[in-house]
Length: 173
Image 1 (cartoon, helix red, strand yellow):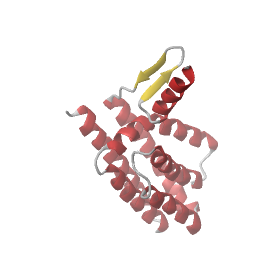
Image 2 (cartoon, rainbow, N blue to C red):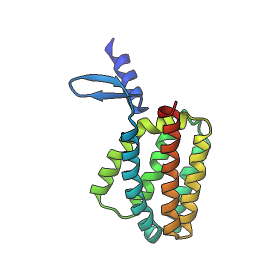
Image 3 (cartoon, rainbow, N blue to C red):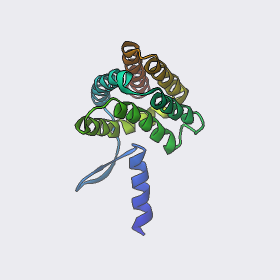
Image 4 (cartoon, rainbow, N blue to C red):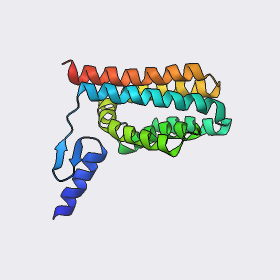
């Protein structure tokens, strides 16, 4: 039956290991250093804009909810698909609270989808899930203190670590 095979490809695609190309089929994800750097530079700029606005607009309760998402990540095995979903929810919630338009959210969702393959690789690296939670914690800490400048730095450091770790793992062997 084709259904189990189709389901398997959908799961591999959701984990970023396979890319489905219309009228061509599924192919194994082959990352390039240029894609990695470009996607994360753009993502950094947009998410820094979002944390700056979230510092001004979010309530204490909303920021506490972001912190709870980060803490939930510690209760789930990093290899689980749910871990990546919580990471996505963490970043999405910050951006939603920034008051950005639906156009910006669509751009971000496209970037987050492009990042899923890289994030899957990143979370498979020893210690990186814990590092992610620590970096998320710094972002939340600065949001709670309403320190936009430091929150922006924390976002940049988070993505610099992702890029550096993936580069070291894939491209510097």
